[in-house]
Length: 144
Image (cartoon, rainbow, N blue to C red; front, side):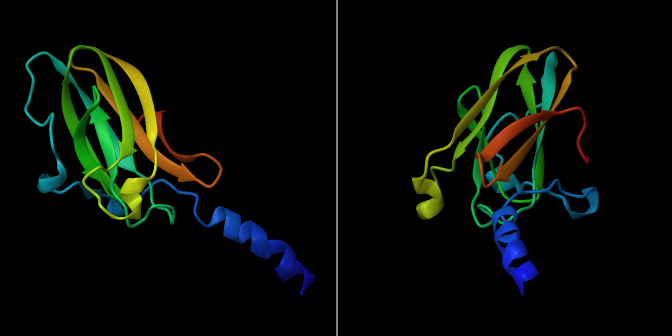
């Protein structure tokens, strides 16, 4: 009984942390939620993003932004690619302002500066944890 009482709080605290998606479980963001940066660019780079699986915010979309403009509304276990111009780009995540539920009423703003080069590929992951909430992290490669 003591063991259960000791382990239960740890399970509750870790239950909402996310974990990277396996490639076979990852889904593309549907076309109706891809809102920009989908046209091929002759001299541009590619930004790829995946959102982890996890309990925190599972029913909510996260707004993925490029240069402060919403490029996609990304759900749990989804991935997308974006064609961006050369130069320093600001990629980030924020609250999905199209959501009128509790999901759209919080505060979220995480951003990274990315020096995009012609033909370059840049990979990011959206994760969540109990201690820091949602975050966007650079990755060397992604599942897809």
